[in-house]
Length: 142
Image 1: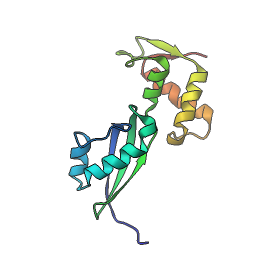
Image 2 (image 1 turned 135 degrees about the horizontal axis):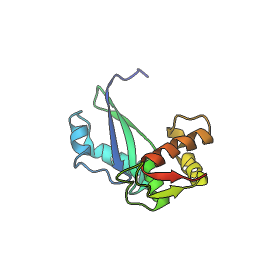
Image 3 (image 1 turned 135 degrees about the vertical axis):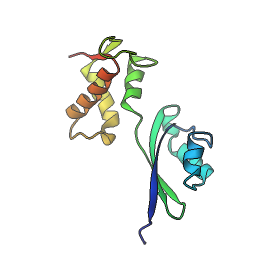
Image 4 (image 1 turned 45 degrees about the vertical axis):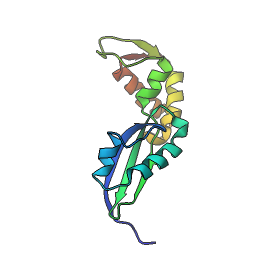
């Protein structure tokens, strides 16, 4: 099989199972010449398990207007908000602490995110998640 020529990449964050031709999906794919409905159907089928969660997706667009896409796991901030039962992070992180999270909760989140993180083991991944929590105004308990 001959190697396809790539014309570009499109990075989007769409709620799982809820892709539709409305902005931001339609305009982003339309200007690349991709069949929007074909993408929406394929994306929604693959992301049924992530229903309602924000899912990052990287779409590879080829010269012949065909495409492939890679689905990532939801952002760490989403998992942190889910565990803490919060609507959003602190308006002033570093000044206003809105809650605290345990090391075990960080490790649980790190397990879910492991394939998308740049870490060799679970402890390193937990440190990355801890940094995200701190930037949201959440204290990390020992």
